[in-house]
Amino acid sequence: MSLDQPPQTDPSGGAPGEQPPIPSPPTARRRRKAGAALAAGVLVAAGAAAAVLLTGTDGGGRAVRLSTPPSLDGGAYRLDADTRQLAQQGVSVQRKMPKGSTSVLGRYRRADDAASGLSLSGAYGSIGDPAKVRDAMFSGFEGGASAASVARHRQRFTPLGASGPDIECEVVKMNGLVYAPACTWAEPSDAAMVLGVNTRSTTADSVDMRAFAKVTAGIYRDARKLS
Image (cartoon, rainbow, N blue to C red; front, side, top):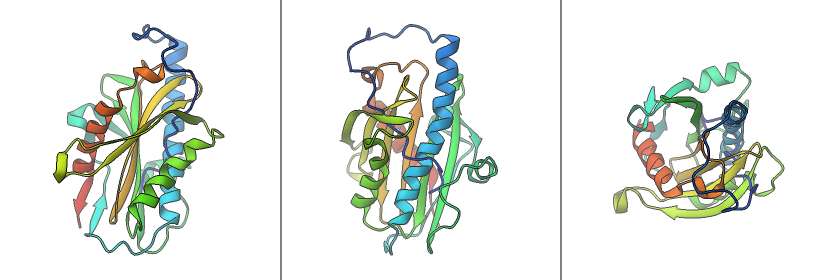
């Protein structure tokens, strides 16, 4: 999957509700760490994508390919590095893809805050069992051994209603400081994880999973193209 980042980790740091509901403006140190979390998020997403690709079998779904559009969410996020550029930086899902699968990875920055952004990692082609693929993408956060750990467990959303996919999300703690939503979709033809990093999300409760599920649903529509 093209977002060569391990499943954007949803660290289990910090107990929800311990801090005020409205976080204070980010300090320079917090912004630097948020920027580092965004970079780490790409790696985490790549790891999640790798798990998906390793489970690849003949999905038998429609011919769909994933792309990294120049902007997402109505221009709120702008492409900073695509699959090829990240590979040149040493970030990729895996060196050799399973037959019939193509990985996609992208890093985006917020137009109004360069320290915030999101990573998109996924794969298309022969994906296999969507439920197993989804579980595999989230599994990287559960051990707590990476830069991210689970802070709030998975919930399912249907932002596009019956005509759209199920979007599952959880909140992870990145770099011991920033809390980020990690949302996925998984279908026989393609699967992806979207990890969002916001410099102001300094508590688990400050993350609105439902809102980010809606953003992910928009990315689902923008990034998927019929081959």
